[in-house]
Length: 183
Image 1 (cartoon, helix red, strand yellow):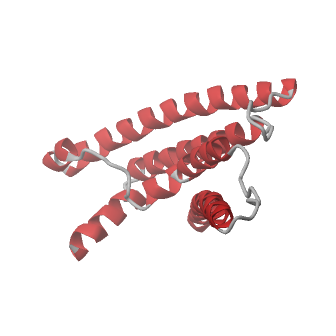
Image 2: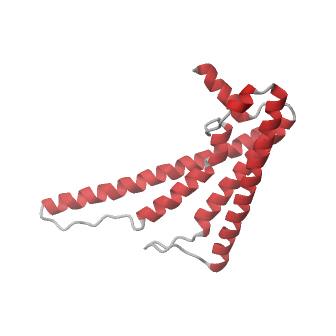
């Protein structure tokens, strides 16, 4: 089960990386188009008008997907900002208990956010809602990516809670310790 969850989190991280790469490619095409237009004008030729319609909107949707799809994977790799001052000062058993309560509380919040986001995505699907830009993007797509990312975060937090309650070390704690050991 551990390997399956890790593969799911890594797959979501890969999708997040692809979304960031897509943003970079779209911006590069837009910038190159502007440079080509300027060069054409300087040479007295008609500019070809290479542009990416709705770039800001599409880039925003890709960014939203990248951020939310990366949540679970970055948590497991110990890359989220966590304040562990109190848990480090407590005895191991108390620290585990507080960690489990914190992870479960965070999972509850992530679960609520997943539910709310899922309802919004469902409404967008049901009503055929699209974006306002030149390129009409169905809103359920970015909302669905957000919902999936939140659901994976909720799963990762529940996984961490169970791991703490069973006396194990959650993946993010092991990753943090490994980073500290490597300096």
